[in-house]
Length: 301
Ligand code: PSU
Ligand code: MN
Image 1 (cartoon, rainbow, N blue to C red):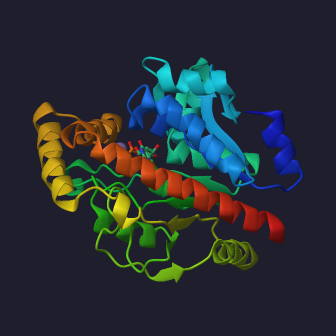
Image 2: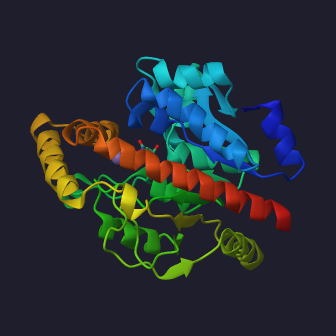
């Protein structure tokens, strides 16, 4: 594992650090916007007084923090792999490069000593799970990794109620940030309730300290932060295009790791780019909140 000097000294000195994933850049957003976004998100973390650590695997080496060249590779390299936790060892052994998902990123961030991570929407239980058994490895990793993930809920392409049930079974703590409803990724709400609500970054840091004080299984904390209503995707448009996207995936036989990128791309095209704007608004908000939580966490350390 190679950590940049900047990130390593911030961790050593207990200064705020925010981990960022790379799959959203490589597989979640279209080129060339994805590189701009990668740079912008790092800048947003810096403006908030924290150090960004974008995580990926380059030439077999897990990297904690990327320079501009590394970000460019993630954004542009053709055929880049998508790496969950289970893919890290083969990528390392075979000297391959890949972008890390929430699963891969959470694992590496926690190993590096980073406690706060921002992304867009988590993976989860896919629709049709009764027949295809597709459940993102994100859920399993979060059930045994001590990290705080700030996200806009789980991707709305998923079976959201089933995903919330799985998170409950796996003992992953979920809190709504200034909301009583679980966010819907592109949408302000999924319509599902959340059991816990917090109002401040300090309350998130307090829950993190309580997790450590209590001990027990090292599960994550999910801070679910909704995209503002003004920046969400039009719910009627969302429902219509998502139904089309699911039908297209079915007809084309898209499965496995390819399904999430396929559906996200279908939504971008089918909404004339509006889903991309909502996705970015959600991620930006999550990065800002994660930076504030990291600052609060660092203060109390
Ligand atoms: N959030 C986004 N866009 C994305 C993702 C998250 O706004 O593309 C990625 C994350 O890396 C997440 C992955 O871990 O999608 C889930 O993929 P799968 O369903 O194959 O586990
Ligand atoms: Mn899957």
